[in-house]
Length: 296
Length: 292
Image (cartoon, rainbow over all chains, first blue to last red; front, side, top):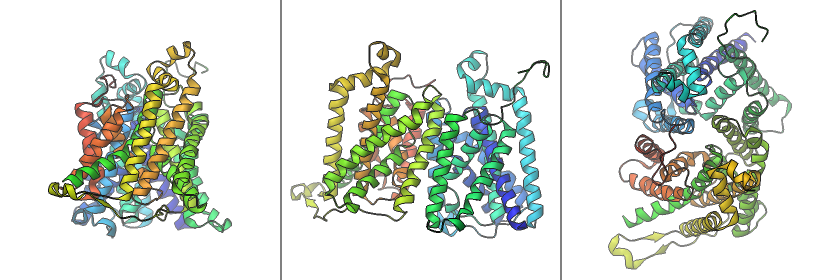
């Protein structure tokens, strides 16, 4: 039971970091990143290959995170001045292209063979879990600070009405770019931890479903609320993991059918959450004057 | 060379139907429907069900599947998009991703992940000896079918959109929904009709993709990027221009195989899309009002 609990906590921590990243991009700033899985994969591969080529795992992680943040900013530059639909398709397209490169450029990524034996920054499962939880806490604190800082307020203004923000003298393009890169960095960190945790990566581990999970976490947790992200990741991972036990009870369904059913539930959950609970379970942080004295 | 151009035009016609479907829903509802790929997949499998499981001839199966695909799209609008109308376009965007997940995995749940094919007679390709001087041209049976179905559907939509009361209502709602409502055009009915046409077109696209290659649950997803690129290239608020965009995309991706391996077609679509968004995001025929 203990190893299972350990792996569950790992999954929650990694998904939580990715959700926090998406929350900065989409929840706080309103930038739709459908290519989340591509940036996650990019970071995992950069980190793994750097580690394999003799870099210290710590250094490899830092470099991969920085690279992913830069790549996010670069991709978003194509359409960040346009409306949201365009950013969605551009990020998705970039992610699909990354995946094609990973599959076909075997000299660079070993293609479908995958990269085995990736060294971790700390040895042992428990210390690594502690490191991951520490990183989750670090990202959480950082993003809480951002949400309360002038940068976070400006980001919410850009999300709610870019025209008003621009009229008030905010540089909308620069703000969007910075926050998209910041969120991309967190998504990259999640990717690195994925590579370290499994110690083996191949292209089949990364697909659009990662994007769907992250979006589900952000919607359920409440757009803009970092605390909501932790709560929703915990719930969603437990629920999804719980459905795995269905295997024992419904023997008449094949495992691939169960997998399809699980993904249908994710899609359905997304739609239902959007229709019935669009504000999520935790409200985002709002600056208030005279806190405690008002009843609202 | 002639062969490459021809193949490009045919694969462009293939993309044209879903691209038109996408542009229709964008021009009227102002949201990018990411479920278009899954609608294509679902339509293809519905046609497969009628064709192979029930043993109907392909033309009847296709007709039934196209109508059913349209009805499914109307039902999805009722269940998902209508309750969300009035929210931001981004909400609809994410909802359509959820719809795509449900549809694609419903197909996977019922039909499994193995590639399938329609029940069609294999036939000899047609050759044109008179064109040998230009490098020769051979046309598969499937290519004839694709061209015929695609051009036929496009003609129907063109007549419907440009020369009927319904088409006029659609254009009116696309232009200014409130004003159209004042003049007695029912928004709900027009949107439902649009979804029917959109779903039918996507299903027809699914039929063509299935004829061109095989059916698998990923088939629509793989076409998502070329379809978006085609719709944006034409000018996303001008539905018929998407056809032009699709033909350009088809020829471009076919020509690109001369230079880079064919599995990088998606990359070509992405590069075209990226360049376009940087230079002329409103497309070739659109108006410069998409930017915020």
